Length: 247
Length: 51
Image (cartoon, rainbow over all chains, first blue to last red; front, side, top):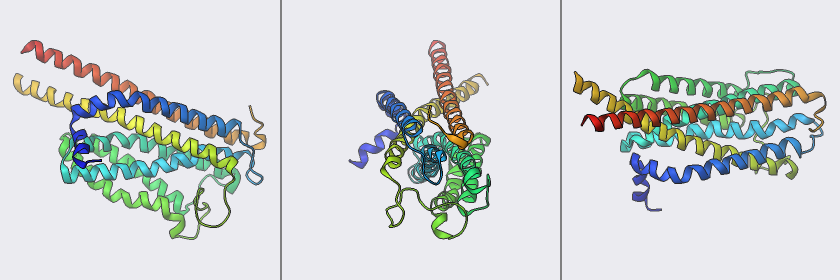
């Protein structure tokens, strides 16, 4: 793809026109895939010989944790685009993604606690992966609060971009904490290419479908919310202009 | 409904919580999107009529 073509989407009008056509398809596909993955996982997979029926929580926990980290990485990329190219759409896309990432992190934390209680005998442990996820959750809250606290959109975009760069350390830690510190209760990656115990296809296939569903849901929500942020920004500009004319 | 055995509470509460959170996120996003579109249309129309 020509990079110049990609920058065309930094034009708010072009972005809204394109997403007008794309969004219904992505949303429909997200509903289908997510529904299929969760129904398959919940109703049509067997119990695990060690974990019993709690293994069904994997279809929520792993995809939401995946999206919690990747949402922040997407925000990092769009924040860098804002810092370097000053495209408003990219800053607004980062803003739009934050609440989605926050909910994904919350789902990962809650389902992890619910799963941990019967398996580990505790809802929570100050384990490296759990702790870095909690810090990531707090970073999401801080990021959203910072956007809301600053009136000037450009200043807010600058400061939240810096916060996003700092928070990226914890997004990466959340992913690799288990590898960095060989301690804690949390297991290693569920879907690993490294040699060792492998997950059976019976569990793996619905997990892939559920993961695809979460990715598509994220894309659909971010597209819709970016459109909303573009309109909200234009609304603020028009209201400010109107006030100045009446002053 | 599958037989979830002694872990039924854990599995059902994980699914219920996640579905509630996802649906709430979708509803809030759609409502805000609709409100913003209407507000913007209203002010643009007003600005056009005011010249």
